[in-house]
Each structure stands twice: as structure tokens, then as C-alpha cells.
Image 1: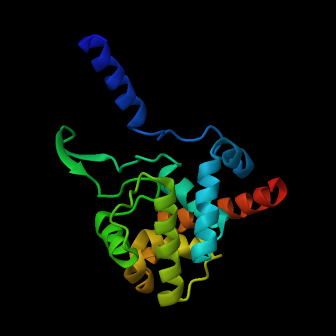
Image 2 (image 1 turned 135 degrees about the vertical axis):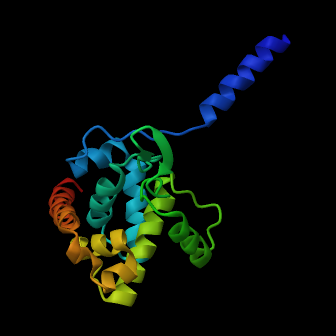
Image 3 (image 1 turned 90 degrees about the horizontal axis):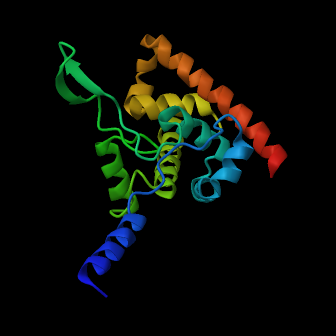
Length: 192
């Protein structure tokens, strides 16, 4: 086999192993369709529900709001004077849009140095851990998608200080997360 052919085969093999499918599922408004299209997502959320007690519909609604199920989602860039790049709005990344510091806290607590924010099983486990901790520290039910989302977005300290009360837009977003969670719950009950 020629060197060029071997190099081409090796390059094609490496290209097929890399990356991953970070695109969003086609139908995000139907929990059953989402579960059929991406069964690995559904299995990851079920594993998180078994481990942490956070219901699948709450996880689905939160991931929908945070990343629309795009595995490599990032916050937009900021610009000064409309043209000078200043970097991203935050370090949020992946399905869960976990910030660097919070992700590192999770890795320390769960011993998961290999965990990645762009891997659905790791992202849902992170969310389960975070919401479990919010229940333990703040008394927020794991079934309360709205309050869990507010604590997830503002951080536990921000939630405890009720920082969300000065952010009308965030209260509306949290209400829409709760509505979507209820919709997903109803759909999942009919498709299982």
C-alpha cells in the first residue's frame, strides 16, 4: 500500500472518530420525537433521574432553555464599539451551559475529571448533581422546574438572595421552563 493511500485512510479514520454530533434534534417541541431521534439523550436523562432523583421532564426543559440540545453551545461574543472583540459573555459551554467554576466544583465533588460538558451523559449528571444540591441546601423540590431553573441560572447564593426578583425577563423564562417541563411530562407519559 502506498504511503499516500495509507495516510488518506488514516486521515479518514481519524476524521470519523472526532467531533461528535452537536446539532440539535429536529423536533424540540415533542418529547417523544426527541427521545426517538436521540435515544442516547433519553437514556442519559433516565440514568440521571435514577441517580439524583431529578425527573426527565425537568432535565429536558432545562437543557432546552440552556442550549436547545446543542452539545457545543457557547454564549455569544461581546464587542466594544460594535467591532472590537472582548471575548464571550461567560464561560458557559455545552448542553448544560455550565460555567467553568461550577463545572470544576462538580468534577471535584464527583471525582469526574474526565467528564465533558459536550457529552450528554456528563451534562445531565452535572445537572442532576446541581439540582440535588439545590434541594439539599435550599429546599427546592426536584419537581419544581421553575424554582430549580432560577437557582440553576442565578446560582444558589443568588437564588437565596432572590436576585431574580429584579430580573423580570428571567422570571418569565423560568415560567416558560416550567410550562415546557409540564408539556414534556405529559408527552412522555403517553409515549413510554
